[in-house]
Image 1 (cartoon, rainbow, N blue to C red):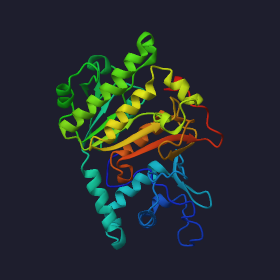
Image 2 (cartoon, rainbow, N blue to C red):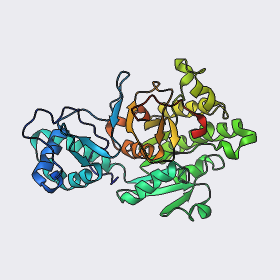
Image 3 (cartoon, rainbow, N blue to C red):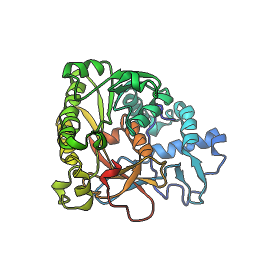
Image 4 (cartoon, helix red, strand yellow):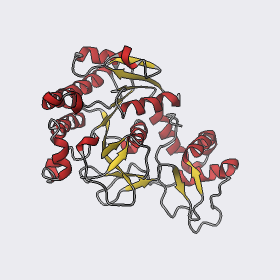
Length: 342
C-alpha cells in the first residue's frame, strides 16, 4: 500500500468536496464501480488542497484509518482506495484537464527507485524500513550498525551504516546508487547515561551532518530527516517551555538536532524535515495534524504515522524543501511534549 507509484500520498480534499453535489455521492460500494473511481480521481486531481500545504494559521488533518469521509459519513478505506486508484490511473490521465498533473507525478516518483533507511533498527526507522520493504515499489536497504545482529529481526537487504564510526568515504559507498535517503538516527539516552551530551553531539549533529555530506557526494536525490518539534525552540521563545526543557535535558539533543537541520537546508539537496511530537509505540488513535515549522510545542504521535509521512515525503512535491511538524489530533488539548518519549 506504500508503492511509490504515480499518485500523490496523504491527499486531503476539502471537507465540502462532496457536499451539495447530487451526482457525486460516495457509497460503500464505490470500489466495485470503476467509473465512480475514475470520477473520484478526476475530482481529486482538480483540487489543489494537499496535506503538504501547511500554513501558520492552518493545521491539515488526515484521519489515520480512512482517506476521507463524505457528507453522509460514508467512508472509503484508504488502502482499498489506493489499490483501486492505481488500477485506474492510466485511464484517469487521459482526461484533458488532469494530464499535465499526472505527468508531473510520474516524473516525481520515477526518480526514486532505491532508498536507504539510516537507523533501520530504531523504533521509527524499523517501521519505515518494513513499510517500504513490504510495498515492493522500490529497492530498499536498511542501514544498520551491526548487520549480523540486525539480520535476526529484519528481513531484506541490510548494509553497515554508522554515522559516528564510519568515514565520509565509507558512508558515501553505502549510499552509492541510492536515489532517496531517510535519516532516522538519534542518540539513545538510556545507553549513554554518563555521556549524553557527547553522544547527542556525535550522532544528532556531527554524524548526521556527515551523512548529509555523503548523500550529496553519492548523488542522492532526496533526503528525509526525522527530527523533533521544538528543535528550533530557542528561535521562537520556547527555551523555557516545559517541552523544550524536558527534552533538551537529555544531552542538549534539540540544540544538536537544529545544527543538522540547518546544514541540510543549506546543502542544496531536495529535503523534507519531519518534526514529530512525542513518539508513541502504539498504533495511532487520532487524525494526523500537519503544521508549519515552529508552531508546535506539545503533542504526541504514533511512530506508524511518522513512518507514513516519511515515505510520502520521498515523492510528494508539496513536501519538497519543507519542514513539517506533525502530531495526532485526538480532539483534546495536546499533552506536554515529554523528552522521555523520544
